[in-house]
Length: 266
Ligand SMILES: Nc1ncnc2c1ncn2[C@@H]1O[C@H](COP(=O)(O)OP(=O)(O)OP(=O)(O)O)[C@@H](O)[C@H]1O
Ligand SMILES: [Mg+2]
Image 1 (cartoon, rainbow, N blue to C red):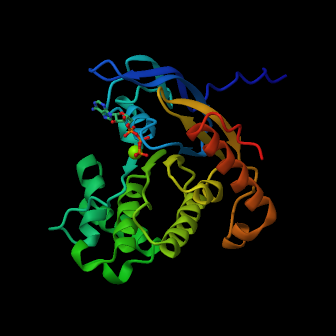
Image 2: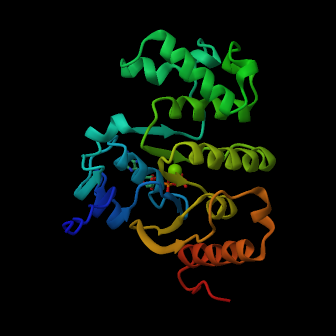
């Protein structure tokens, strides 16, 4: 007889996480949540409610004031080697070519030899459709192309956890939609677990397995909205009635936290 399986602890766990700044302001209070491997969780909420702060706590870039965070059994600081962070601006090094920007994370990691890094970079550049510009410099690319380089660079180290802070906020809508589809394609390849900050409700619904709506002052999770659509998701989903209905529901929840007298229901 096989013994009963011991329940696995959640892949990511936040327990009553609180963050207070040195000026005494509490930016996040009592944030509790668990995430399974492979989930895609979007954080949405009013400006200043603490979304970027929460990502920085997960990334071990800022200490907690109270509570606990565990990522794959590790503290945020220890989990850094299984994480990548993508910011709104692509933060590429201007003096390095596209290819050598993609190789950067692997170089810093120090676990690979040059030929391995080259192969990994070539594969990723191919995946994001940038093989033709591998030898150009960031200044020679459009904003959307720079963001694709940034994504390729983040994925080169095969992170188990990907943290993205408004990565597509500065791009036009068509480029954003295209990159959303690309992120989902990359996720099919390599099931990283993602925390994604955005102000776009449609983007959050298109990408996520779950949406967390945050309220401000102090930042807390006000609503948790599962997104039931199966993967792979394609562009057609954006015009499906059930997609539009969910966009409406999330927008209502967002209005409710922006203006608490509004219940979010029509
Ligand atoms: N180092 C710091 N010291 C004091 N206050 C800070 C610090 N960093 C951020 N804040 C404040 O914490 C609050 C939350 O900031 P955060 O950047 O997390 O918001 P956000 O939800 O990401 O907003 P946005 O949608 O505009 O990006 C803001 O009021 C900000 O001014
Ligand atoms: Mg922010």
